[in-house]
Amino acid sequence: MSGWDSDDNLNSITSAEENELQRVHRLLCDYHSKRKVLRELRPKQERVASLRSKLDDEDGGDLAVAAELQKLDVDIAQLQDKIKALEDKSDGKISPLDLAEALKTLGKKCTKKEIFDMIWEVDENLDGCIDWEEMRLMFERNITDKTGLEPSKLFNLVQFMIFDKDENGLVSVDETMNMLYARYGRARMEAKLKELFGSDMKETGKSGGEISFLQYLASVEKTQLFTFLDSSMGQAQVARSGSEKMLMGSVCPERPPK
Image 1 (cartoon, rainbow, N blue to C red):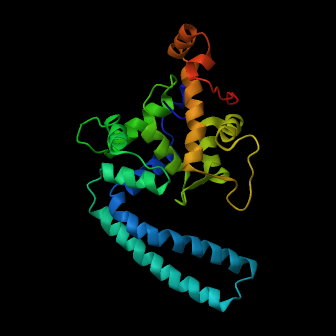
Image 2 (cartoon, helix red, strand yellow):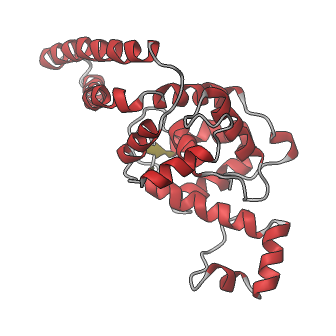
Image 3 (spheres, rainbow, N blue to C red):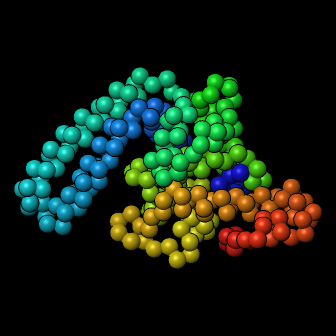
C-alpha cells in the first residue's frame, strides 16, 4: 500500500525526492555498523544547535559557549570522518541487520520474519538485501500506486526518513512542507499535512509540531486503508462484506479529508 495518492502528472520522482532518497539509502547501508558512531554524533549535533541558538539570543558574547562549540565542532568532524570511512567501504546494500537496527532506533522492534518480509517484498534480484535500484523502484511504485495494494512497509520507513532531514527521529511540519508542496501544490499539501499531524497541528519552536515514527505509521496506514477501500478491489470487498465497518472490524477510523 502506498502512503500517498497521486495524480497522472505526479508519476515521477521529483529531484528533491531523488536527492533525499539517495541520502536515506546511503544512511541505511551499513547502518548496523554506523549506529555506534551515530549514537555519539546525534547528541553532539543537537547540543551544537542549542548552543548556536543561545549565542544568537545573546549576540555571541558568551566565551564559554563559544569554546564549547569549538570543541564540539572538532568532535563532530572526527565522528563524521568515521561514518564516511564506513560508507566508502560499503557495498551499497541494506542488509536485514541494517533495517532492523534502523527500525529499532525509531522505536519499532520487528521480528526476524517481519524484517525478511520487508526485504522480500522489494528484493528483485533475491540476494536478501536492498540495493539502490531496488529502493528507487520501490519508492516509484509506491508514489504512483492508486490501489493501496503496493507493499509499503519499507516505503513508510524510507518516506519518514526522507522527511526527517535532521535525522533526529522526529518529523516536523517544517521538514515536510517543502517536499509535499513540490509534489502536490499548496492546496493538497495542506491536506497531506493534516493527514500526518492532525487538524489541530501546532507549529511550535523553529521546526514546528513534531511526530514520531510510530505516530507517522498510524497516520499513513489509515490513509493507505482508505486508498484501498476506494479502489475497485476494495469496493468489491465492501460490497461482499456489506459495509466498510464490517470489512474493517469493530473500529472504523474517520476518513481523512480529501
